[in-house]
Length: 444
Image (cartoon, rainbow, N blue to C red):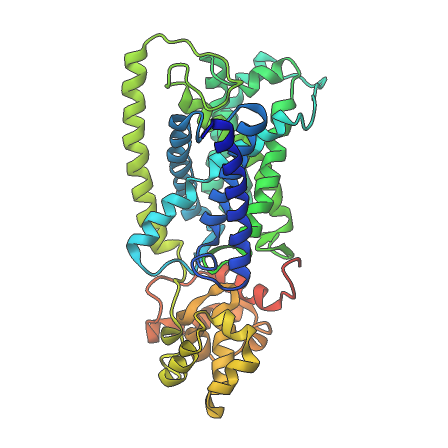
């Protein structure tokens, strides 16, 4: 089989995987509904890489597998780094995470590994399609201004740690200013060098790739059992999927930041680069570069493991559960009857409620429906649903009437008595539950 034939097969199989994933998610088919993100993104990555190789003779998976694996590794490390920032920011949390600890651990790496390949393949497609063709501006960054960038970057990274509620957006850009002068000085792929001559095409394409990938991220996330939920301060009202409208403005600079971060890492790879348009780096001090790079690999893995250990305690809010686990305190017999009908997920039962209620005894119908509605609200899980019920909030309709300032201390006291949750409640997440109860669709 020729490489061109392989590229065509990648295009077809990648696109088929994306379509199958969304079909399976909508129809509650395992494993797509429970794990939509990795299937949707690896499918898209295979499709894009095959398309680039088929039409332009450029690719990563087949043409340069070493660089593809490098991007996968550093993608996971970079996102685990941002998860550390989120321990302070508390801008998002995870719900419906796999209950099996080993698989949850492995999937975290698989999911995070898609970020850089996804962003950069979309960027390279825009480059090949010349979208936009060229962006030359009168605004040129002078060398003197570039010298102030590291200080600006340090300030942008420090402010979110000190006042996270007000300066959290600066995380998605601070490393651009901090690392870009290093890339320019040491002969790497540099946006600053482009900007000094008024060339902004690469920046605009990266920004566009960021918003396109951001939309796809949120599309994959919204209907999946395993998902992330945003608890962003100041502008949490009004959402497209799970993302506040203004939150989409963070994806473009995030793409630029990832581009700069990986370019900084590639300074140590002695001329090798994932981007075919990157300038050739000087190959001096090869041994020193190799040692530093190996040390960074080890430190990156250690940082990722430490980050995951914190994440699973402080950022994961609920895990996937069986129908038996969700309804065990109401009626195990009814749960068993529902499972025998082939229904695996609470949202699936609600979607088929007219048929489902026929196998539920009359005394349990109302309570089971209310429990399932609470459990599926941003996939909060049965523990949080039971906590709300013990606080007198037995339905989504009741939850939407609550005031966060009154509900939060009540739930904290209730959890101190019942010990249902092992981790502390956060007011932002309570606010998110109430906001989700008030939502009418995925678009507002």
